[in-house]
Amino acid sequence: MTDDASPDTREETEGGTDGLTAALPGLDLGDEEAAGRYQVLARKYRPSGFSDLVGQEAMVRTLTNAFASGRLAHAFVLTGVRGVGKTTTARIIARALNCVGPDGTGGPTIEPCGVCENCRAIAEDRHVDVLEMDAASRTGVDDIRELIEGVRYRPVSARYKVYIIDEVHMLSRNAFNALLKTLEEPPEHVKFIFATTEIRKVPITVLSRCQRFDLRRIGAENLSADFARIAATEGAAISDRAIRLIARAADGSHRDGLSILDQVITTGAACDGEISEDQVRDMLGLADRTRGFDLLEAVFAGDAVRALDILEDDYRNGADPMQVLQDLLEITHWLTRIKLVPAAAEAAGVPEAESERGSDLAGRLGMGALARAWQMLLKGVKEAQGAPSVVQAVEMILIRLAYVSELPTPEEALKTLDGGGSPRGSSAPPAPAASAPRPGGAPVGAVAAEPVAAPPPEAVSDARPHPTSLAEVIALAETRGEPVLKVQLINNVRLVHFEPGRIEFSLEDGAPQEIVGNLARFLRAETGERWMVSLSNQSGEQTAAQKADAETAEEKAVIAETPLVKSILETFPGATIETVRRLGPETAEQPDDDGPAGGNEGEPPE
Image (cartoon, rainbow, N blue to C red; front, top):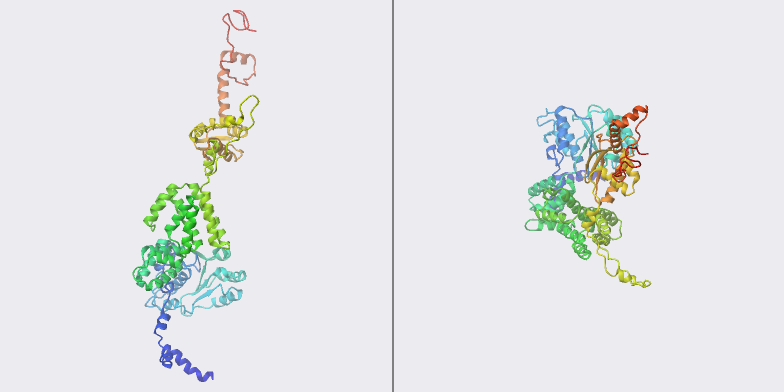
């Protein structure tokens, strides 16, 4: 029965849809044929040469030099995030190795012709000498043994037999071990090309036998330019801001971006006019970028009610709460960069409205507030991912951010406490109640009834010490009861540079390294300012103890040359000056009017 039906079946199959249409004349397959011929953009615009690769200039430059000089490795490993072109690059390398040119006489080239039989067969994935293996489904050692068995045979029609192993990190340990010997010394007609997203899972013994190329995450500017070109080729009218939004949502992946672009073009096919940014946001479930700024301003202002209202509106309009949280993280990071590098606000691709608003918001916020918001949002992402309700978790994160914004920074708290006031955001303590009257006097409450005005913060700040030399720092350590720090500064510190807020020095051999941290903490606590204390490679000055010893030795030398002391030293050979005491005017003996103290005129003192 099967044999009798085979000729008719083959005839209908070879005839394609014509045979089926003839059998069913009432069936119109025009639409089905059109749908069958359609290719998604990721396949339709897959690069066919190295010049078509987007954002991989470093790899292309290296391979160009390798082909030009004939220094072609026997094994390559391509790594990078999903969608940056690892498998596509592997196929292009296979074509470049086996291209023979339009006339059939060419050699390996960085620009495969695309018209010779080898190029067309590899592009259509039907070349017998280019074998592509998916390591995710063929992970065992038996699969690798089968591959190794075919390595010893020369290619049928190509110049090289090329083995492309995708997701190579999925191979088992035994499979990797079985591949090692062949990978190290393959026949001259064999090339290996590996692709992986998890390069750390590939054994180092395999990596050391391959030439490694790291495919970069594609920048948003390169993606925007390429997506705009493809949209124009497809005849789709998409606004520039919508294209930039697609590029940002692609997150460095060309394939992901083309999939989103394909969906956008399909969504806007029935719409008249240009596809707008708002339409793309609705399709992707993203919140408006300006809403992210509104949300941040609300939480930094401590307005939790307004922040929750904005989140509720975004959620009602289809925005993903996790994406809202990611947007807040991204904006906080961008504002921090603007705080450090103001030119970041005018980077290419940033709309003018966002640039102006970001610069204004960064100017009004302190670095401490931005850093605190970043940490809380970063922890909030993990919290929301594990929460039963994501939107409720995001609401709690916004409430915490709003209330934390009312708390003082550590610097403000220290200044407030030093000034005797209460920290910002907390209520003042109640006045003490009147107590029982003292015997024979007024009650205590009467004395405390008048508030004592706290000195202004400026006065408190001015009253703090501001040392301008190392000697003043040593004196400050002595007066503040830090004898250990004082001794370490005197005996171990060789000053290199000193200015208010910054000290640089070297240490004596064997001195403890914790002097740096102890001195920085001491100066911060005493002066209320942040001091930069660092070690230097320069030798620096003498220590304070060495300077004092040198001054004392010089004074002893001067004293030894005075006539009286010199005669004493000559009278008592071997005598030395041990101590030099400086007497102030209040301790020096004053002679009487009648003569020297302790005796009559003309007589020496006792």
